[in-house]
Length: 229
Image: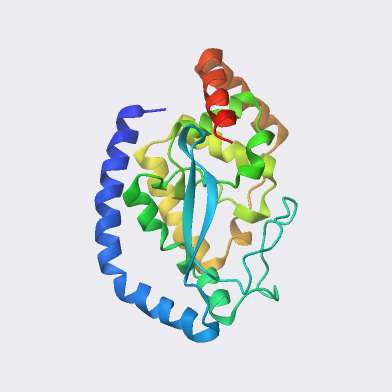
C-alpha cells in the first residue's frame, strides 16, 4: 500500500466532501422533503459498520425502506427493485445511488473516504482469513473495486478479493478507472459489470499478501478487528 498516496487521498477527499456537501445541499433538501412527505418517517438511516483497524462507526444513508428493523441475510445482499419493503422514493434514490449521499458526512468526519473497500456490517467480522484483514488498514470508501465489478451480485468471497486487491494496489490510475466505472454502473447497472473472481486469482493474491505483509502486521490487524467487536 502506498501510504503517502493514501494520506494525500484523505486530504483531498475531505476538501471534496466539504465542497460536495455545499453543492448537493439543494438535492439533500429535495430528497429529505420527498422521504418525509411519503410516509412521515425519519429521513436519515444510520447503520453500524466496521471501519479502519476494526473500529465501528455509523454509516449514514437516506432511508429507502419502510422498516429498517429487518433481519439481515448474508446470502441475500441484493435488494431487488420489487422488494415490498422499499418506499416509492426509496426505489428511485437507490437506483441512482442518491441514498449514499449522506456518507459525505462520514468522509468529513474521517470515518470514510471516496474510493476504498466498502464497509461491511459487523456480522461479517468473523468471516475473514487473517491475510484478508489488510482491508482494515484503510478507511472504507463510498465506492470501490468491488462495487464496479458486480457489487451485490458478487459472492462475499469475491468482494473480499477486490477489497484486499485495492488496498495492496491503490494508485491514482486505479482510482481514475474506478471513478469512470462507477459512472457506468450508475447508468447501466451493477449486473452489466459483473466480473467474478477465479480460484487462481484468489490464490495468487493470497500468496502476494502473505509475501508483502508480515505475519505480525496481519495478526495485529486481526486483534484490533476482533477487539472492536
